[in-house]
Image (cartoon, rainbow, N blue to C red; front, side):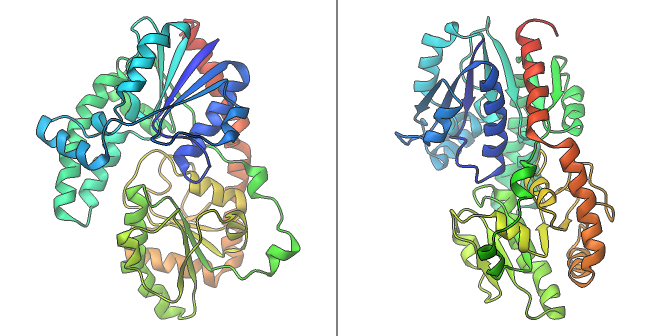
Length: 393
């Protein structure tokens, strides 16, 4: 069959969770079907790696920049996403060419406003329930005005998200928790839990002799700074938790891989904190750090970063939101803490008792090895999509 996969960004390189989920699911669907990837991008080129998995790759410019889109959204009473991810060029192409395909996969709520013929099967691949994520960031935002805007935008988006999802033939979600939320919204079509995964073999590979010589940090955080919950989490950890840990361990080292540094993160000035250069091989950091932290206060979906840490065998300390939707239990697979003092003490527990920490990490590794490999996840996705398109659901 022939598919169009519509994405709000180019899913390569694999620097952040959204790209990772899209890439591996797209790769699996393309192994069985002819897939055209249609992405929003103001660039005129794309990574050649995508040519290995897609029959065709098309790039379409965004209509407006983010700031202008947010202004229009406020004035019109519509969700900001409906302007940020708008592309007349993409919609025009869909109107001219969609009838030549059997189905379309809409990647994320971001693209749910894209034109799709009513006769065409439409599957929406959710990474988060976007309105839930935006409302959470609004409630926990340290900037009062921005928080108020996020809460308003989130409420408007929630209404639209419910409407748009109900117009689809099938939905893919990352966890049963999200599936239950969509059912409560009245989404009665096929909803399949297609979890995020991890390339276990890649993250469990042994380091070479040169990598073993490099000095790595004690504590590690990884997450794109372009995703606000990550920025918020880094600042929360630095302001509230880091001072407690440093009081007990003055020589402790903390490294952040965020794919860049923005204005807020530049304010973090500490000789014991370093930022890993964009483009660095992150695997050695996973393998040699003593602790991986996920101090998130908001967000949605499930965190691929935790699956990667588990695959690498590194102990994890996380908030409840950080491990939401995953079968990891406190004191069994990781340590979970939701206030600064408890989070700091959990970190110190790992650093002072590496043997117990390793036992938890080993149990987490067994979970991801058994339940979160991309091959099995991709197979479940293609079976579900095939069933929807062939009218078997």
